[in-house]
Length: 279
View 1 (cartoon, rainbow, N blue to C red):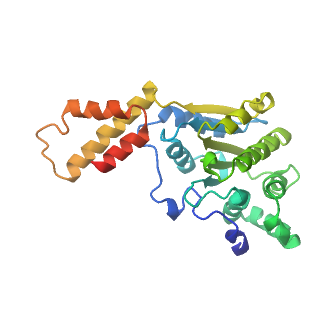
View 2 (view 1 turned 90 degrees about the vertical axis):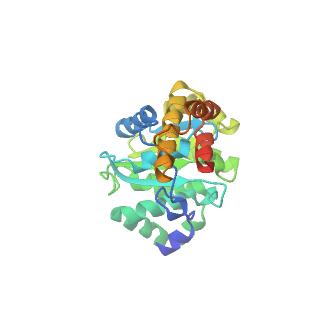
View 3 (view 1 turned 135 degrees about the vertical axis):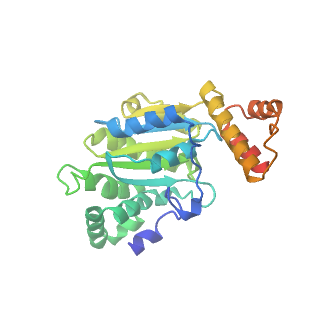
């Protein structure tokens, strides 16, 4: 496990201290999107086991993925995650080992199985992504494997576009597609979030790929997004008023000022969050 840990992406897991506090959906927001994602995880069958959450920068994809990762999911027995970031968490060559380590730390039968594989062939830790994917994320979950009855396994990959090389991003998507297509009985369900980068869009646009995934598009300026941002702003401004003992007898901020801020934010959570931090 120590050797495995050395090959992982530090701080990439959803509960890592390196990301504390992580972005989360504000209470009462993104409810419809979260409900659809959780329903997909619980009910995904056959080869359609990948959900692509796509949206522009700042719309709150990471908050949605964090909230999914933290959600109680009775149908999920194990979960692993990678939250890519250009800030030192972007080495795509370590992606599979990172996921394998997390699963091994939580699931004893899985740990024993991959320990056997690595003991038999230590070069696996230096092998290609495809070789590691086959050994760590396909073979352990084949029908004849001791892990066949493990239950649903959730793997979250957030910020795929922040992985260091576009070729690696495409390779990871191709490996996941191949696994979903060739092994429909696999218990692994994939949640993948990214910006709408051209090479990622072109991958999902392929006719044969549409059979294995569902798309969740987060629009920047939809009515739902604007309503969620408005709720966030009102709640946070109320918190600030209480925290700093501002005069509660008068309205703060004035309603016209609130709407200036809300209209400037639109449906972009990152704008609203930055404004709140400044205030």
